[in-house]
Length: 349
Ligand code: XUL
Ligand code: MN
Image 1: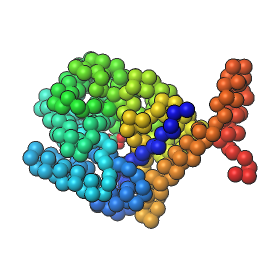
Image 2: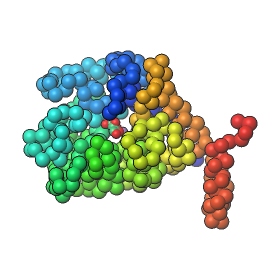
Image 3: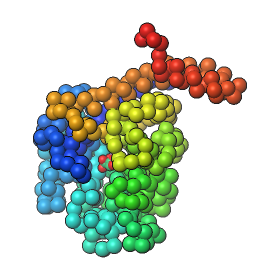
Image 4: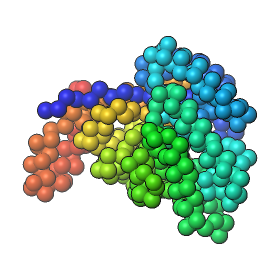
C-alpha cells in the first residue's frame, strides 16, 4: 500500500477577521500582520496564503522596485520562522478601478490596471518562492445581465490569463470559482467552467483550480465531486476547506461545522486522489463567528484542523472491503447506515 500522506496546513491573514458584516462594525480589534504570523506558527500550521497586499501593504501606491524590496523582506521573515508562502492572489475587488469588474471591466483602463496588478502578484510570488497564483474572480460577472457581453467577458478573461502566463513561464494560475457574491452571477461559477476556460489559453497546462467547499455548495454542487473532477485533470492545486449552511451569503464556517458527512466525503476524495503528494496544502478559508471574543479568536482555525484530522482517521478506518461488498450487492441502504454508524462511532468512544 502506498505511504499515507502527511498533510500540510495553511490559512491566510484574512482568516483572523474582525467580525464586521454589512450590518455592523467589527467586534474584535484589528491585529497586526506580525501577530497573525506568530499565531500561525504557534498553532503549528506550515504555510500562509497571501493576497498581494497582505504581502506588500498599500501596493497600489508603491513602485515595482519598492514592491520587490518589501517582498524580499517578507521572504526573509518567513524563512527565519520556518514558514512558506502557499500562494499569492491579486486582490482585485477593493480598488476604485475594479468597481465594474477587473479583467472584464467595460473600461479598458481598468482592465489594464487589473492585468498590471496581476503581473506584480506573480513577481511577488516568485520572490516568496511559490508558483501558485490564486484568482478569485470576485467582480467578474454582472449585477444586471445587459451591462456586459458574456461572450466578450470570456475573451477578456483569456486575454488576462494569457498575459499572466506569458509574464512568467513557471507561474500556475489556480482559478477559485464562486457562483455569486458579490456579483449576482459570476462568469466562472464552477470548476467545470474554470477548466474549460483553461483550454482557451496559450498554455492550458498551467491553468488549474482551487476548490472552496462553500463555493461549491453555493453552486448547488457536492464539493467532493468537484474535488474528484478537478483531480481527474490533475488540476487541483489548492483547496479552501470550510462549510456552508445552504444557499445564502458565503459563510466560511469551520470545516465540518454543518455537514460532517460531506466533510468525510471531501477528505475521502482527497485521499483517493493523492492530494498533497505534489506539495499541495490543505488551506482553511474559515472565519470566526461574529460573536467570537478576542480570547477565542483562533479557535475556528485550530478546530477546523482538528476536525480534518479526526475525519481523516475516520476515512482511514472506514471498512472499504465491507463497503465494496454492499456496493456489489446494490445494498445502498446498508451502505448509507454503515457510513452513519462509522461517523457516529460507538457510544463508548
Ligand atoms: C472569497 C474567498 C476569498 C479567496 C481569496 O469568497 O474565498 O477569500 O479565497 O481571495
Ligand atoms: Mn476562498
